[in-house]
Length: 293
Ligand code: AMP
Ligand code: ZN
Image (cartoon, rainbow, N blue to C red; front, side, top):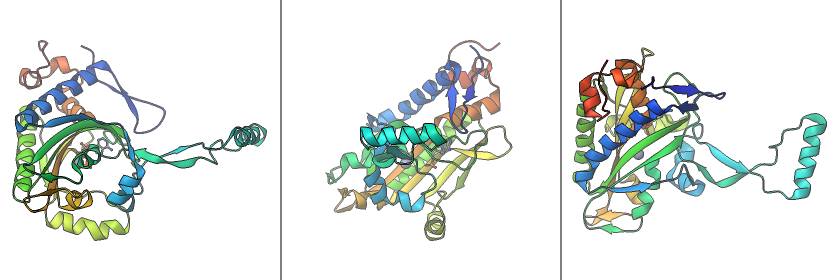
């Protein structure tokens, strides 16, 4: 098996993965689904774009305007396009000066596709859902592991205010044990989302005080630890926005999010770039097969 590689492209933060890298991603996915299955988890396939209006309603635009990738298209007619092309040929005018924002944006986190699936419902019991998506974030830097396009596997829990925080804590512990078994040295820390501008002042202190977000961080070989997973408790934020009810009140939600490329990069940093030579215990945990050389 060749070295697992993330091959850079001409734009920063966008990489192509070779099959050895992708084989590890497949193994991580199976392992995570194995944890999720006993919880009667419903699995979905979700697209890499989402309703712009939905993200506006969720407050994503206010909190992370810098990270959101918008999609613009040309909606003019033939005549207009001919004029644009002519100006482009004549004096190098940009082809995209008349692009119009569309009704979809690039998906910034997988779980935004899952809450609407139970909108306007009263749940008889907690619901667990999972999906994986290619996410896009317009990151301002592009050190190793900080991608603009990356995959995020999420497991989401929707239930009552008593059970949901405990579920979040359980997944945090589960992730920690899983990473231990993969030979990754991980630190577990409370964190805040990277709110932009004034949103940081308004949102971050509460998130930190109430320990709503936890990150599991590992060194990807740069000497600086990066989050490879997070476990988040949103209280009644999404339950309220989507009118999901349980136990006579608004449902609470939590999600556990795993950055698949980052986990592979952490494994490479810890064990080398050739998965066939990773310790037998790690290959065994991931059912990667093959023998160590
Ligand atoms: P978050 O919603 O920020 O907690 O992200 C969930 C997980 O997605 C993180 O713990 C990372 O593993 C992964 N992730 C987030 N941003 C990036 C990025 N720019 N590049 C690669 N992975 C990322
Ligand atoms: Zn989430």
